[in-house]
Length: 307
Image (tube, rainbow, N blue to C red; front, side):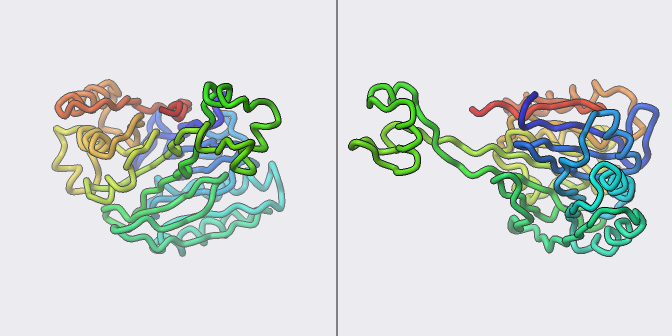
């Protein structure tokens, strides 16, 4: 099993369907888990997906619309059942703070729910938390109520080059010594390593196309983006402040996303293939190499291997 992967718990916008639960996206990242969105029924989807609730460190909600947060009480209740007395942090925009506190109160569960509001803006990433050595941040998007996109970015680092180590005569415990001390027998760490870009996960739910969307998605190895409508209904997307599959794919191309997960589908559509076809056509139009995955409930999508 990949140490970094997305478990899709629900893919429906507004109303669930026979095949789509309300939104829920669990990111497994180096031994911990972050739940993004918790629509109605998320607790049951976690059971079906085999998700261990004690590993969920925090819940990140994009905004206060019900299809993104009405499952919070059930998730907290499940956490209290599996690991009573534990602490979990719930994040959301300032506009949703009172809503999230009320939902945590409704749960009335043996879990310490800390609700932390994010004062996000369109213009900069706002720090949210540290997650297993990576930086979780948020940025305000463009929806009918304040909604944020989240970005989890691992710091850039360096990795050893086996051939360079062998040429320098560094092996066994000496590799660790060199890493700790920086220099060993005249060999510098920089002599036997190369840059290792940090991995990036991004999620952007309800939003119109906006420069802030590009900022949330920039350089993401794995990006989850709403595609509520198809382009033939672009007027509805604009009216209700959502994206089409074409707009989502085009934004991913602009931002240099590697693997794009489309989700948050309107119940008016029954053929997921239409979303894939529209997104891939948009990418072909701009000559972008972005892998497209049209999400289905209970899919597991790995974060791509490092470049």
